[in-house]
Image 1: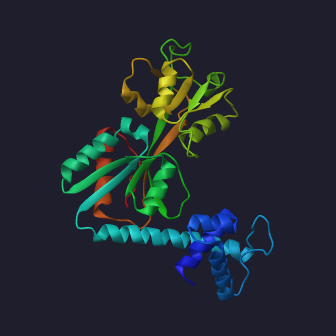
Image 2: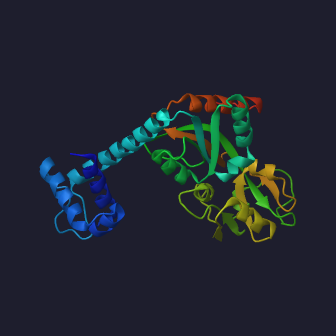
Image 3: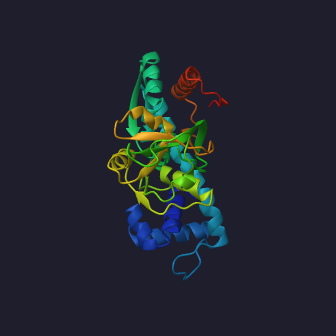
Length: 304
């Protein structure tokens, strides 16, 4: 059994169709069918239910699919790490969700660059879902995101739980008042959530905060990114719930009010390939904790 057999099988299982799988793999359908047949003959079991439309896996096929995905992820991770070790220059590629730019990420990167000038640091804005794929493909080395994931090939370290706040335009009826707002006060307001795609995303964290309290906003407007959401808030088109660090933007046409519920939070996660323990990553995580300590952020400190 070779790795190509597993790649072909996973493609067929995920597409549930030989024609689409062949297109995805850039091969003709007959050779693909022969490769799957050879795999079944070698294992001595049927992996696909004969004649099923759409294609269905047997119990043995389901078992193989789960383990094949994990093995292929490990192969991609090994390839990326080997390529990195073989490079003569030291480099660190960082993926980040846009909202972290308004928090402590710029200071973290700046301090890291000052301390480790021999390391070439590059930054790439991408959603958490895009970060996970980029990590597995070796396009980035670390991701700063907000979405929890169960991908076994990715290790996630929770850096902090950041409070959410409500963004409103200055003339909004809820723009002034004592204390924080409650989510039940917001259900009749047009709610701007982001990003629209890919999902799941921060938008789903916001909607989950309502759902967990048996609340449902009357109108949800999905937009592509944070800046668009805030621009529409400033135009009076609705309200938005954002991480509190976004207040660092200092826009004159948007104000922020806190939420009463201290459990309305969004995590900040440090994501790396599961086996990656490079000095660059260890040093970056140490700088993260150093900056957090300087701002009084307490909590457990997990190391690589």
